Length: 262
Image 1 (cartoon, rainbow, N blue to C red):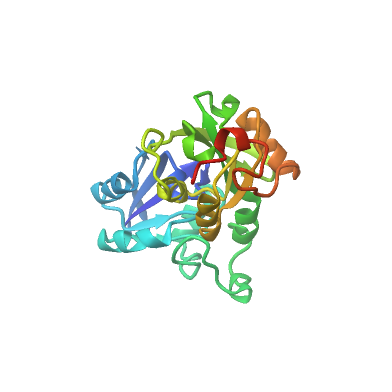
Image 2 (tube, rainbow, N blue to C red):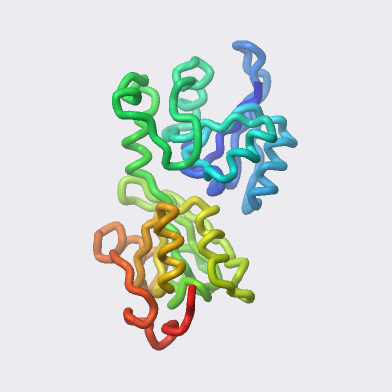
């Protein structure tokens, strides 16, 4: 059996699409045969499935996995177990010991009833608490610079994004992603791209109503009115100073983005 665990630092990644690498463990019975790191970098979804197939992965353990991609995983012969959080070593040990066999299996955001969750071993992974305390915050930015990049005045025309994993109010790690639709902006395309990146929160200077509606329906919290550096916008959101949405034409950036649709 080969089991893949997407990494975010030393923890299980909160989203498979957010991981830049994963640990692949192969076991024969109770014997561990091999363990290696596999690079994912900024691979697209099709490329990630190719990696899973190339390494003949049987089981994928992760924090979240989009519902619409589960059929692809099934066709690739990969069983996906989501809703996990904690140190990779703890999760791997729990899986091979059979202690997470009955944990949540399915798409992102799905949950079993609380009484079922209470029967799992609490000394391995406090799943529900960790999933609440951890979140992926995405910031629309202009140019590069990581957390020091400047927030874009408009979501639909940003150069790219900074994705930061936040744990208990602290930024633990971050990475940059280019906006693939920056030169060919079409309504609806960018929100779908953001959904695939697995963010819980999106921060931007401004945004159109249609984009906000699409993101909110997919479970992503949107806050507009962000300014300054990406790091400062995230910190303002975590303090509660940056909250709420106002469509373009109704917020401070009306002059620069009042006519955009997305």
